[in-house]
Amino acid sequence: MKLVLIGPPGSGKGTQALKLKERYGIPHLSSGDILRAQVAAGTEFGKKIKVYMDRGEIGPAELITEVILHHLAETCPDGFILDGFPRTLYQAEKLGASHSVDAALFIDVSEPEIASRITGRRTCKSCGAIYHMKTKPSRAEGLCDACGGALFHRADDNEETVLNRIRVYKTETRPVLDFYRGSGLLRTINGEREAEEIFADIVELLG
Ligand code: AMP
Image (cartoon, rainbow, N blue to C red; front, side, top):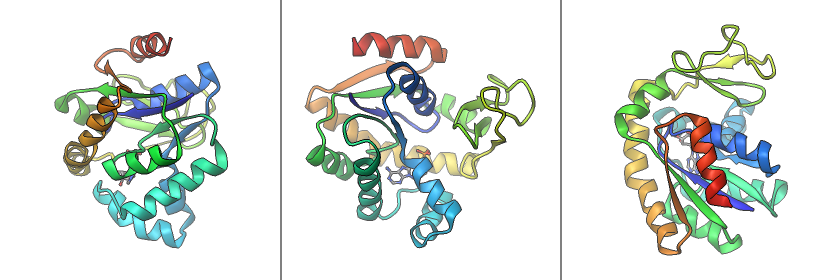
C-alpha cells in the first residue's frame, strides 16, 4: 500500500502514521524526521535546510525532493506511509512520476486548534511517539510511555514559527489536495476528534 498523509502542522499525521505502521506493517517515512536527522548530523545539506526549518518554511524544492525520493527508493520502494511529503505541487508531481499512490488521506483540522496542539507537543527522540503537555501527557514527565526515550520540544513548535508553517501550508500544500482530488485519490477525515476515532475512520476508508 502506498499512502500519503496530508494535513496542516499538528493535524496528527505523525500519530496516525505510527498507528497505520503498527496495524498494517507498512514503513512510515516522515520527511520532517529525515530532514531533522540531517540537521542533527551536521551534514552540508542539513546546514543548508536548517535555516528554512527554523523559520517553518519550505526549503530548496528540488534538493529536498531529491533527498526524500532517494530515501524512499532506498528504504521502502514497494509500500509506504508518507508523512509531510509531498508538501508542494512540484513534490506531488515528482512522486507521481515514480510511484502510483493508492490513497491520499487528508486530516482536516481548523486553524485555532492547530496552534494550541503544536505549542504543547512533545515528541519521543527514540520512537517518535507524540504527546501533549495538557491533553496527552506522558506518565513520567519528559519520558516516553512506550520506550522510556527522552521527550523533546521541537525547535519549530513555537507560536511564531507555527503561524508561518500554517501560512506555508495554505499557500503551498493546499494545491496538493486539489492534485489528489483531481485524480480521485483524496479521502478527507475530520481530524478534530480523538486519535482512536480518526484511526477507525482511516481503517474503514482503506477497507
Ligand atoms: P514536519 O516535521 O513535517 O512538520 O516538518 C518540519 C519542517 O521540515 C517543515 O516546516 C519544513 O521546513 C521541513 N520539511 C518537512 N517536509 C518537507 C517537505 N516535504 N518539503 C520541504 N520542506 C519540508
